[in-house]
Amino acid sequence: MRRTIAITLGDPAGIGPEVVRKALRSGRLDRRFRYEVVLAAAAPRVVLGRPSRKGAQFALRALEAGVAGCLEGRYAALVTGPVNKAALRAVGFRAPGQTEWLAARTGTKKFAMMLVGGPLRVTLATIHVPLRKAPSLLTRQGILDAILLTHAGLRRFGIRNPRIAVAALNPHGGAAGEEGLEERRIIAPAVHAARRQLGSRITGPHTPDAVFRDAWIGKVEAIVAMYHDQGLVPLKMVAFERGVNLTLGLPILRTSPDHGTAYALAGKHRADPRSMIEALRLAAKLAARARRA
Image (cartoon, rainbow, N blue to C red; front, side):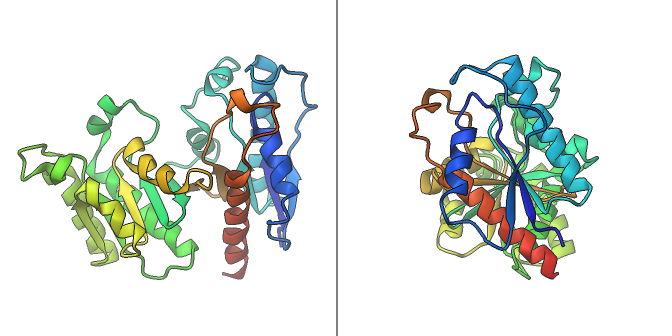
């Protein structure tokens, strides 16, 4: 059985190395697993706080090695450190982010980001796109896929019959068409299709400004949000230091801390490791459940 969780440091000029080191020394990790920092090449000399081609190449090679190790069965999970997307693009990285790159690398057609923090689990129907483009990218099939992926992801948590609330896009859920038509034309049909497959515990579209309270007080196990900040603002408000990104749909288990490279903190020994600790703990929890299944 695979008992090793792989960790990539991300951009070596950011806080990734520091939060990984602190997490490994925290004493809060699952001792049933070993933790291996993936070093596909020698760490380059970089200026802390400054992205560089050398740092981006180092991060990309580690990411490639970590995925390969998971696909080959050497690792039970992959926890990825924060990277600089602009620096990665300068060395040939063509994906909007690590999530999309991982999907392409593993041949995954349907995938989603689920953010986990405190009592909230939030899946995003659209990910790294400008806000003005998000409505045009919403489709019935895309929202249905996000719901189905969320349902399968929650079952990995051990929730046998999860309750999932789907958020509306517009204020007041479109207000019967007065403030938007996406609810009627796209979101509601996707919810109905999901209910036919999964049952009545899939509900929506719900008014965005109220639905997150339902998750906060335990009425639902997850929310499917329509765009990035709709889901991330409430999650970061209640679990800023403990948020974790879990990628749904991949053939490998991947988590990451929900923060960036934080160059301004690099080298100052003040980076908070709690998000990395939670990413490692969640990876171990889900890996252990998968082994028992």
